Length: 84
Image (cartoon, rainbow, N blue to C red; front, side, top):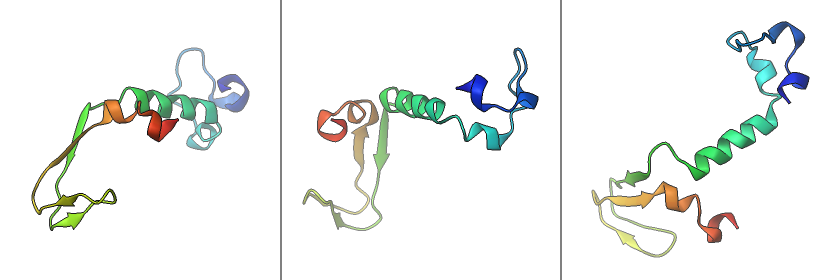
């Protein structure tokens, strides 16, 4: 994909610093591979959220103001119920 979609002026033997951003948008398989790798191996294993006011989640769970919700991105990226 890189050899066929990058314009001839941007190809060098070992340096891709001079790639045109418009040419990089053509690399759809590379984009998909990077997104999939980040889904399976996120840069941070956990993330937390904290609401500023009380709320109810779509699941029906009530969340009080300033409480913390902690979820594991590593596990979330592997849930069959989400990704199939």
